[in-house]
Length: 71
Length: 527
Image (tube, rainbow over all chains, first blue to last red; front, top):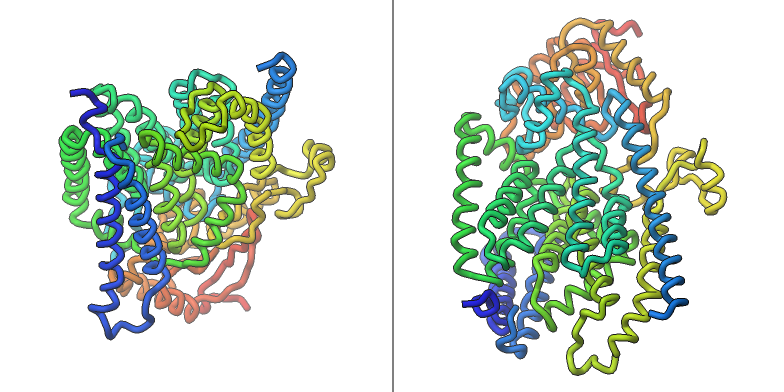
């Protein structure tokens, strides 16, 4: 099997990134939902992490149409 | 390329090389200036000297801070182990650690140039400019010739990623093993290298998931074994001092300010690097450099907002962007950038022609954006010719200025006044008896006294709820310390309160841009 064949495709990478981003986004949000009594709401580190995970999901979604091209 | 275009390109490349070489000259002179200075220049350097001295005595610096001398290090051991033979031979001194850091930065620059040369179509000029661009960065300049472990971490990271980039696709087992070993070296030089390790593993997973998993397991086992050995040898203090005490407050303003500054200083090469990242994401295979750049820029940049962090946290991303931009330029000049169907109206020859004109100008712009130099002495005429006015200490120009929080306020050259000020503080220590509580270890080491406490470490432990300080406070209350020397008041509040009650500020000595406050026991205060 050649190196080219064994790698991950753009579609697979896109799906993985979209899922990781979405799960990460929900997990970060759930910190506040679970710990409802915590004062201050979403903190600066949390908002940055939300932004990053959302961006990760969007990049993932944009890669899915590229199909079997190697990532 | 026509003859005229070739001449123009050649002239502009020479101009860019001259501008970046001037930056290198300033960097070399700065390093020489620091090598001769026997005290702390950057806060905390002395504690790294002390760590090396402890290793040279076959002692670990991960210790219980509740007992005298209340000292512990929060850094991994490798850099200090590298300096330990010098500490054994020459005793506590700054020059060998600063020299190691400086040589490390040169090795990283050489590896960057080699990567661009080998993977970018063997274009010597672009390869050389890529390496010089790394050394010209204000962030690299600051920390390169310091007795700090950060630059050595970056050196190991760069070497690891460059080796991995060729070895993994070629299934070169020795090369992959070497790259992962270098990553372990980076991680045991400074914990921040975990970001590069994550990027490397993610890239291997993209290129060959099965092989990547096998290598990752081996990598994890080797790294974990060293971790367990350190923890065992230190009686659990490695975990407390290097991991638990390393979690600090996050300041969003600092991270945002540093991101903006990073862009302002490196934008001329940062944008081309981002273009290659986007190109590889959608039109080609992702290189390890792209993933490494994205991870180092995002995660390293965010980490730069932590208390005690700063611009140095961007250096890894600067190394990656120098490689990526160099590769993009090489591929544009070589016509080796296949365009997707929608962009094929941009003919390769047009792109190449634009590159010939634009690429040297981008390096020239970068050299101007990262310019820093003395404005007095031999440099005064150059500064005048360039229209520069000092913006630091009255005799130094730094294009970054000192306005952004977290940007290291160093880089200027030291003079005889700074050396005399250091000698004055050591003389004050020599006039006293007993141990001295100093926020810089250099003075106490020069006076042959014990290094007592590491204030930032005590602060971090205190914030983590892992520092009581009863014995230290009892010694302060009993006025057992002949002197207290403050620079930044980093001690935990309870320690500062005790010092305030039992010691009195009597002298201020100005050294390398900072005020050192000298406090004496109140009972023996002549005033």
